[in-house]
Amino acid sequence: MRVLVTGGAGYIGSVVAAQLLESGHDVSVLDDLSTGHREAVPEGCRFVEGGIRERAADVLAGHGIEAVLHFAARSVVPESMARPERYWDGNVGCTLALLEAMRTNGVARIVFSSTAAVYGEPESAEIGEDAPVRPGNPYGATKAAIDTALTEFARMHGIGAASLRYFNVAGAYAGLGERHDPETHLIPIVLQVALGRRESVAVYGEDYPTADGTCVRDYIHVADLAEAHLLALDACRPGEHRVYNLGNGTGFSVRQVVDVCREVTGRPVPAVAADRRPGDPAVLVASSERARRELGWTPRRPELRRIVADAWDFHTGGDSAGRPAG
Ligand code: UFG
Image 1 (tube, protein in one colour):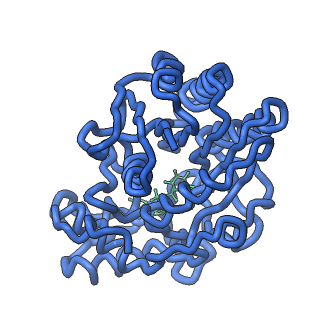
Image 2 (tube, rainbow, N blue to C red):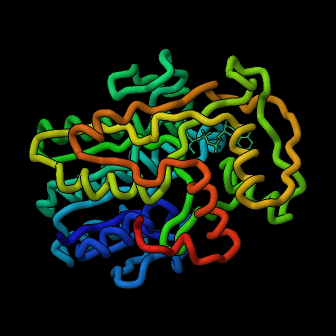
């Protein structure tokens, strides 16, 4: 299939672009490089530098695109709280422009990067897709708004859409890993400490109602997450908008993550207790039953140790993260 990957120079978009190529798809990447890296775009992709509003229609028409995988977005929660207008414009506004470009060019399939942040502070331990959507920050609110728009576009314009709600994505694949600046995510920060690039990791809150008092999250390997995108792409049906939560269904506390990083790296990782970070729910664990049942998705790299090891290989320039999917 001829596909467009928006945000294909970013962490998750580049991994999905790599897997699409491996599966024989013709891949175009559109990215404005505001947070992505040109060298992360896998060789074999057609690369167009630019914004969605400026370039999406041309790319869709010029390359006979049949489906879009839409990753390009702003995704830093604290920034979204300080500057919500950037998120409404950059996420919702740009996605509406993309959907309009798709409509005018007869592109009727889209797989969208949604997030567990749409659920806010959940009521139950394992979050299914029917859990109430009540985001606790503008980032989650913009993703929830796009999910709603996709439902309406499927109903009114007959597109086939899938929203994939990611839990905590980590690890690396084929030499492609996480490189945010500034970095806010736990595993890369802990690995920076192991590398001696930071003195310590701050543990944000030790008084949560969890076994060791620190927040619990569901970590999913980026390669497993990417595989779900290819399955969702195949499953898109005209007039349907499907929603899937993607996680392993197992929670690890911040303290447990730090311990696994110490084991994998064999290096000391000083951890310092700090205040809670505003907006952090105590526990976020996915129920991915629907993705397993309807898409036939099975995460093949569920062990946290493997996830951290692949991230460590990426950060240390090792090559085992480049091993073929398996
Ligand atoms: N944490 C620390 N110290 C750090 C960084 C993080 O203790 O230096 C803690 C956080 O407080 C949290 C856990 O580690 O409890 C994981 O934090 P991350 O920032 O790695 O990830 P989040 O769970 O906050 O965020 C992820 C995605 C968001 C998405 C959210 C859904 O990165 O995009 O899940 O809730 F919105």
